[in-house]
Every structure is written in structure tokens, then in C-alpha cells.
Image (cartoon, rainbow, N blue to C red; front, side):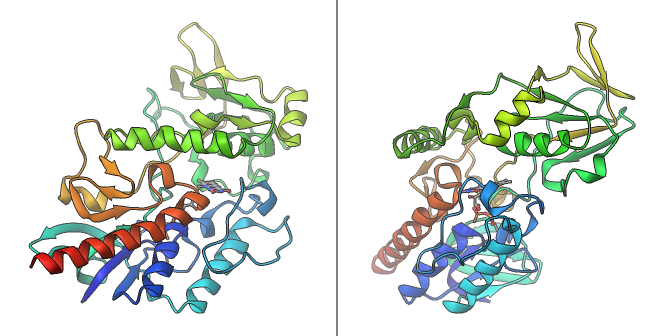
Length: 348
Ligand code: FAD
């Protein structure tokens, strides 16, 4: 099977790129590993309500539905994406997992769960959700309690009566910590003291944060954590949790033991559960055969274009890893890729 352009992934980034390809009359297909529409949003934990998400920006060309802000974001966004795919007649094939991408003389060969595809250009929009990051700490295999990643969290109720250690200093860690602390006892550990800010960051601060991540990926470095740059917002829920003493954080323990966690200075905490809210990495393993990762550990980028492979764009990666960033990057990448492919035709 062949398409001029293959988009990998049907989340915010892939759909915004597909919208622009449709408008440009391109020959394209979207291959998505999920069984249903909704990108990563369909898997977010049920207690992540729309009004507790940072902010979900609408995709180009269709407003978000008028939903109750207390509805689960997973349901609202998945329904909206399904509607979007229908409305603009986007050619999404699923479930199709792209396992490996190889360079060929005139483009790419994709090995997928449903056979082989070829393409002249690629827009990769695979997000991060399928690559939860578990840091290595000694003793992880000794701990006899339960360990889970924030991606597998479904709600606080199942932890009632158990002591939970939450690891991580990002938004997911704080939201899950607060919910769990309402039903049971918790300990919070983070690598660095969290950076709190009294309100959401304005447009200027947002732009500055994105520019910093952009600088990193231009230099071929891994994108890094956006919260590390923007800080955590002191919402009413945060202030209430702080008043209850829930946000008194400790540095991360040095090791896990059979029944808890321990620090080299002799302290220890008994725990039934360790919740690793330690973030995600870009889901790019299928691109490994292209050898685009540089010595800095990242992929050198110029905007969304991969410097070492101009027929490959990464959208929703680094500076465009937000709903608004993906909205802007998807159509821009689609237009730039189509121009590159026309240039390749002219040269042939
Ligand atoms: P995804 O939505 O992850 O879509 C990627 C798609 O690619 C998926 O459907 C996946 O199945 C598919 N895929 C992956 N690998 C393959 C493969 N090899 N082959 C085929 N298909 C593949 N951002 C905001 O702007 N506002 C928020 O409120 C917000 N809240 C967030 C809450 C959480 C808990 C997390 C983790 C992130 C949040 N973000 C938020 C960031 C968010 O991830 C992005 O904004 C955006 O939704 C990601 O879109 P995406 O299209 O890049 O990726």
C-alpha cells in the first residue's frame, strides 16, 4: 500500500496535520495504533475532568462541544476527535501500529501490524503516552507492595487504607497526590523542590517556555520537561492540600525496600503502593532504523523538520507538545512537507 504522505498517530498533532493535508488535496493516510478515536486522551484517568486539564484547545476548523466542565476529559475529547475525523472525512486506519520505518531511495517503507506501507513523506505524531518513563532506583524488584505508573492510575478509591508514596514533581503527580490524599495517607517525593506560581502563566511566559524547549531540540538535545520551565499552578485544590499538609515534599528516596522506601541518611517510610508519576518520553522507537538521533540524545530539528531527514517532520514533539502547539505545528509541517515533496519532483 502506498500514500504520498503517511501521518503516524491520530491525536491532536496528527489530526491537525491531516486537516491541512485534506485541504491541500494531498494523497495521504493516517495510521493510528489505537483501536478507537481519541489519541492519548481516551486513556486519561476518569477523574481528570475537563476543568482540571490545563486547557484543551480545539482542533482547526471545529469548536469543542459544549460539554459539562465536570465531565471526564477522556470522554469529551475522544467524542470530539471521532466527530472531527467524520466531519472532515479523514482517512484514518486503525488499529495500525507502525513498528519500524526504513529509508528507501524515494521515501520510506513502514512495517506495520497490518502489512507494509510506502510513502514519500512522513508526518510523525505519535505523542508520548505509549512510553511511560520509569526511573531506575535500587530495590525496585524487592518492594512487595504495588507499583504503578501515573498512566495506569484510574482513581483514588482503590488505595483507601493503604499508604501511598507518590514520586514526581509534575502536574499529574500533584493532581493524583491530592486525589489520593483525600482517601488515605500519602508521602510525596520529588527530585527538586517544586516551582510554584500563583496563577497560570500568561502568553509571554508560555512563549518563553516554548522557546527554551525549541532551543534544546534545535541543538539536538532531548526536549526536557515543560513543567520544569513553567512551574506548577497554585489552584484552589493545591492551596487546600497545602493547608492539610499534603504538599510537604521530601527528596526522592535512595532505594526501595521490601516494605517501603529508604534514604541513605537512615530515614525510611513504610508503603503499600509506590506511584511513579515520573512522566513520559517521546514514542519514537519505530524511527530507530532511520538513525536520526544524534550524540546529544535528541533529534536535531529545524521547526518540525528533522535536519538529517527533511522528508520527516515530528509534530507534537518538543516545543509543539501541547494541544495549542500541536494545532500550530501540524498544518505548518504538512505545508512544508508538501513543498519539499514538490521540490523533490522538480529535481527528479
Ligand atoms: P497523542 O494524543 O498521544 O496521540 C498519539 C497517537 O499516536 C495515539 O493515538 C497513539 O496510539 C498513536 N501512536 C503512537 N505510536 C504509534 C505507532 N508506533 N504507530 C501508530 N500509531 C501510534 N496538553 C494540553 O495542551 N492541555 C492539557 O490539558 C493537557 N493535559 C495533559 C494531561 C496529561 C495527563 C498528559 C500526559 C498530557 C497532557 N497534555 C496536555 C499534553 C498532551 O499530551 C498534548 O497536548 C497532546 O494531547 C498530545 O497530542 P499528540 O497528538 O501529540 O499525541
